[in-house]
Amino acid sequence: MKYIIFEDFSGHSVPLLFPDRIRHEELREVIPYSRVISAGYVSSLEGDYRCHGEAKELDARSRPEDAEIIAGHFRD
Image 1: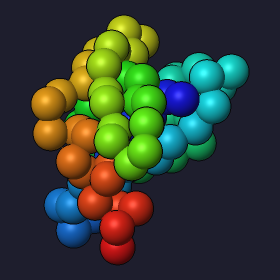
Image 2: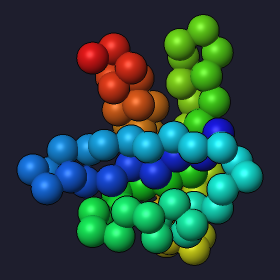
Image 3: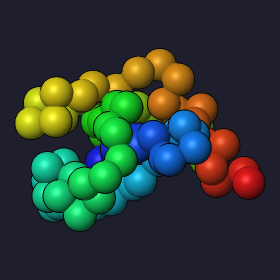
């Protein structure tokens, strides 16, 4: 899967996961008002998330803390 982490209006990180068949820039067009913090690819095995890669078209890449941000949204 792919992901983009946006910054919402209150400054919180909000991850959005979506299928590989959708390009990062296509999803970005749907949510134009938020700032992109990071983007890339995510995989999960038994709740252990791994983020890697980048979205060159958004000038964004995965960061070490992205996996924890994504996992945290599934725990809440």
